[in-house]
Length: 355
Image 1 (tube, rainbow, N blue to C red):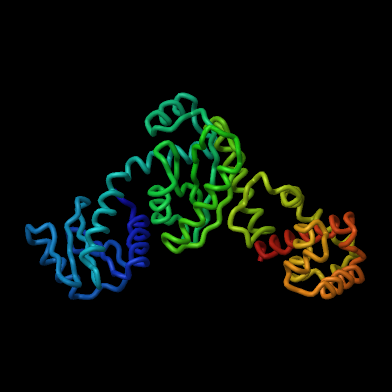
Image 2: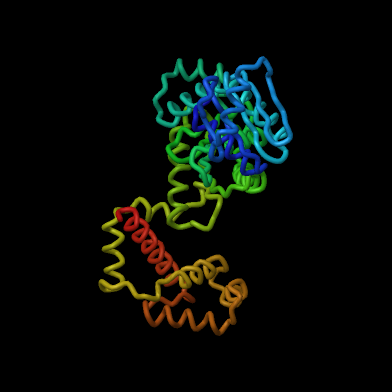
């Protein structure tokens, strides 16, 4: 049986794309899921339709269907017939796959919590058609809508193979265990991550962020890889919030700061700045510092990419030097200042969580 959450996500996703309102009733005429308010006209039509032997009743703007799930689907609006038939197929297909999805969901939960016996691992991978050995990567997908069934279905249709595992087993995000071609090259994992972002943006118009783990060679390592991907996503929220793809193997200094005690970061900043962090540490300064590092402290190229005059950048650097004592034109000062900026971001993020 399809969960109400998945059913609602499916209807809302199709409504968003088609602008056709959709309603699902049980055989007693009680509403189960809907994309807009229910009126008496629709409810009366459903009651009458239930009493007939017809499997469908298609009119120009109000179409009704009896589903194998023992439910009634109603499509209302322009293109109701086409969208209604498509939605009926989608719901019935979801129902036929629900048992497998449930097994896959439970198996993934056990994998990422490292709570599965060797015999169960062997039996369940065989049952689900998943290879124990072979290169795999774990992706965590954070979409606009939590646990969105439409997102999972879209990914299954385009990027997910039978040998992969995908589910919304995480409290907020979708987890994908993706089998890679026989390679340990991170380029393939990167391409998959960007494909996920692009596909969700273009196909169902949802913004998404994707973090992915190191490449593993045995599915028994899923728990470790899942924790890597989850850490990458959390670190991305703090230090890389403008980036849509965050690989675990790209987080270095950020990971060290993230794993430091909150109090140690506060003590370090107080020691560097004698107890008072200068106001110069604003968002504009953060962008300037990042661009300087991206361009190996090259002032001319940094100014060009920031779309400012070279003298304007020099003025900013002088201002930072005067207020903090760090000269970003010097490598050691620039490195130290970058660490300081990251610690400030980390402290602000943790303070916001506490509040």
